[in-house]
Image (cartoon, rainbow, N blue to C red; front, side, top):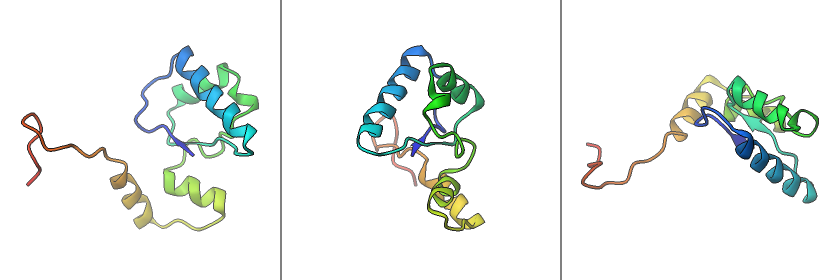
Length: 101
C-alpha cells in the first residue's frame, strides 16, 4: 500500500518512479495499491500508464479503510482517527525543534 497523503503533486519523473516500483512489485507477485491520494496524484499516475496497471480502488480511502478493503475486515471510526495520528511525522528534538511538552 502506497500512502500518498503527504504528496501534494507528482511530476513525470515521480510518476515514472512509482510505475517502476509497481513493475518491481509485480515481478514478486505484489499488486501496488494507492491510499489517501489527491486527485492530482491519481491523474498523474494514470497519465503515466497506471490506469491499466495500478489498482486505484483504494486511492480515496484512509490507510485503515484501504487495508480493511483489501483484507475484507471492518473499520471503525476510532481506527480511522488512530490511523491519521499515526501518519503524523515525528519531530526529533533539536535546537530548532525543542521536545514537545
